[in-house]
Image (cartoon, rainbow, N blue to C red):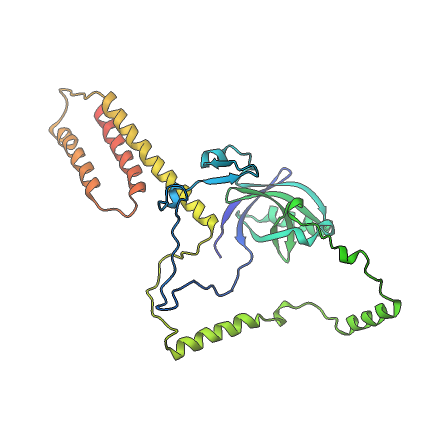
Length: 329
């Protein structure tokens, strides 16, 4: 496994460095939509409803439509102003009896691994939770979103489980249960006997996902038999079905790189206008030669093909500022 987050648990005056890992994964087989005639993948274009043009991820912002019909567009700068917990700290808010947490509010689970030369603080917190039979309520910030979470023990490992907020759990209101007849004592006794006859210790390994097993067998048999249902395609380097959260992160990174490139170019233009050229009698032919070669190096950098033009602009700005600093020295 590869860690997705690093930080520390703030447990009073005790600091517990940890690495975070996703605790679960899905083995469901994913399908794509294809053209039934030739097996080609179905692509979807992002079209603006106003101008009718195709829109790239880097040009997409988030908006909220109010019940009154007002649309509010928010940028990354707007979201940065919102309050958030320390991104690399998991503060313990309080300790509550484990049985008081309704399992319905549990969401995603994450394993915690000690991230220090000595796991003593990690073991101390784990043992304390076990002996007190308590669960720690914490704030956990992941992917720019802060959630309430439960910190508990599973075997020898600390586990964080994000929790749903109370208003995210629907109220179960079913009028059909209001006038439901009560079972007779004899019925309850017979049902209890049946339950006892079917009772056993829970072992999840005894159960299998028959649907996924049969689906995999169907796919393998179809490939082995060939025919008009099988099309050979080139392997794609990226998955078009990545979730919106990852896409938003990529878009934010792209815009950050482009902004850094624009800032570098602005600084270069300002430096060229304000930095005077100095010449001294002690200037050696080799230093003149180096000064003359600097622009040539810059030009060569511009001509060189690059797969990441935005990131290259930031590097190019750094080289230029270094050369100008040498001129002004």
